Image (tube, rainbow, N blue to C red):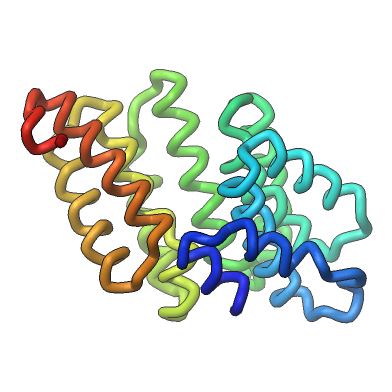
Length: 212
């Protein structure tokens, strides 16, 4: 929990340092270990960049991880690996395959994350935005407890993607809503991301005054 609070407070370096100090994960319950490793990857992404996060995650996969933890690492690698979409898709596919094997025991947050990254890949590759997958992600995230939804939800990311398919009005609505939520939650990292993409959306809409 402390690492999550540090990350949300805009201190991903401290969040990463806290979790990097874990010497032995063996005694951790799988569900708790999965969440901690996901947070470690996110903190690495925000403190040291995508390449460092992917290198860290792929080193994790060399360990004998329980299947739920391995699925989590693959799911978050699919998000971090933004510089290589084929590699990102491979991690996403691996996550979905593991989650499918877990059946009803699959974590809805990890499944939502992997599917959200599939939506991203399709948009970036020019295949359009799959609104059915978007709705599936939202449905899965609705199963998360409030404390996990606040920290793991990918719903805000769709606001970023809508502008890439020229749906600027929807992009604006989603980004403004999630900016308000980030302010309420005192999530400084998400506030920064939402403000940046709101400014881009307004620029693309020709509203330079609003972008400023």
